[in-house]
Length: 184
Image 1 (cartoon, rainbow, N blue to C red):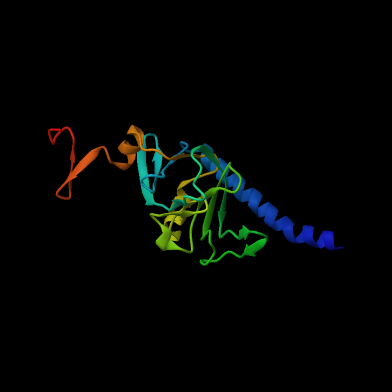
Image 2: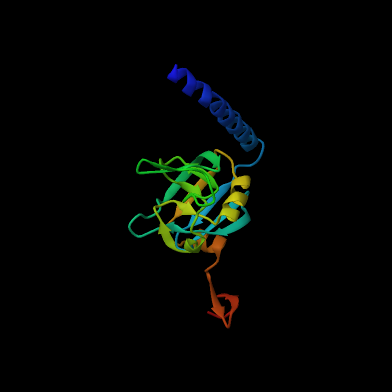
């Protein structure tokens, strides 16, 4: 009897998750895949489509004791109003949840891009390895991404990072001037 009750209670959730996941996958095939580029050094994230940056967001990255993984990953799930599981304790979905209002899961178990209940941590190396955004920003990001989109997390600055996030320039009296035009 108990197993039937649990199955009856979870079946609508599974069906709902399955249909929303299929809708996400269908949407991903109807548009150009997007790239999420995360610069750990800059503590910023960019959404890129066909070489054009669609949006930038400030982020928190992994703390020194729990650094963010680097490499290329794929978005494998998206969850609105996620519950948070840690050390056997479940925190229900709310604005006070450590993962905030959205979860964008990567194909590296336990890692993702998510909101936060600590917005002052944004711009810091403060997470357990995930990429954190303010809730309003992660909600906007969530709407831009689909399962199958690629996430590149980069630990070092290189030419591509400098091109996307800036930094190949020097700042003079609060105005950015490229090295070519500054005579250096």
